[in-house]
Image 1: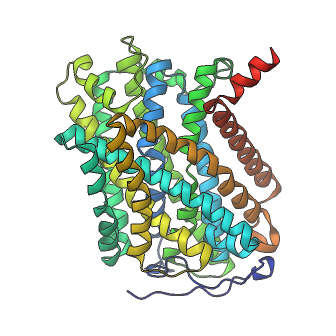
Image 2 (image 1 turned 60 degrees about the vertical axis):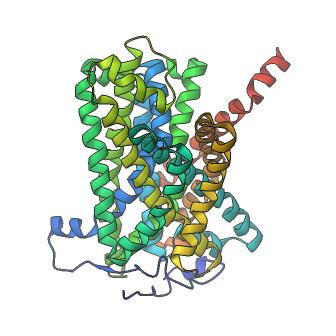
Length: 458
């Protein structure tokens, strides 16, 4: 497959180092965007990266937090899902703009801006986050295989190694083929959850009311804890690296007008895709509220428990099977994009060109080893503990991706005329600050620091 190297960015004076290589060179600029297309055909040419990004917002980590929120508090936390999705739309649009304007993905931008020790530190925490995210996706797929076919979790985890080679095969067939498979899996997840909502018959008035923010969320400690977990599980740091790279698979004109058009269509693409993720995350919580909360089962938080109780409570034999099928599609979809993000980060921070299958296999093995060891020692309960731990690690890393992204896209020296205007800069820093505060609160609560300080001061 022919690959291209982007020209030196016009804003190169704003960077410590000059751009050196294309992001994902094997597919960079591989999808042409003809100049004479109308709006809808041009949108179709740009459509695809948004779907790959959106799957990170509907991975098994999201399922766990959405099910816990719906079973414990009904429809109340739907407003939190909507808020976190709006944050994601903003941040992903900034990631796309960074890639299109500078010709760098976020990892390359960090390498070219910061000193080497800082860049290495960012790489370490980013690799931990990708491994944690990959871990959640591997466990989700393994749990789904166990529920559907009775396959032991440890074997299900090992089978997920095949995903690495599936990505390679699809890429060799063209990046469009990979995007089509991802879209197909997203539609499968959506179709399954539509069926579950039909089975569970939610209260539509209550559902709409759930999207209205309530002060009760801030006052109720347990509700706030789950709300923070939902935001932490929704805004995925690796997606920012991924999006800033894969928007460059489109061969657009690298002129101000060409970049402006690419930003416009990339933003539409990611926004539409993330609205689909909003529907799926909402549907998971709605089904949990209508099935478990309504019947007094307020403690359902594990995927296995949700699977076992869906059919008996709803009186629909296939409800549990449909749930597990959607979970499997979610896990498989997320692992496809997670291994891709691992390659982007490894190559971007070090300008290191490994064979793609090597970098992706390293990412997957990093996720599989702790899963195999934990399941071997603790049994199936180890999977749930690892899922929780993976979300904590993601929370730790998130500020290290969001803050550089907002910083880079706000600097005129780097972005030129495409730098964030004052109102967008203010909004982006507010969102970054809110995410950091909420995740710090989540981590303090998780490690018991908040309760310790409360006892100390009382």
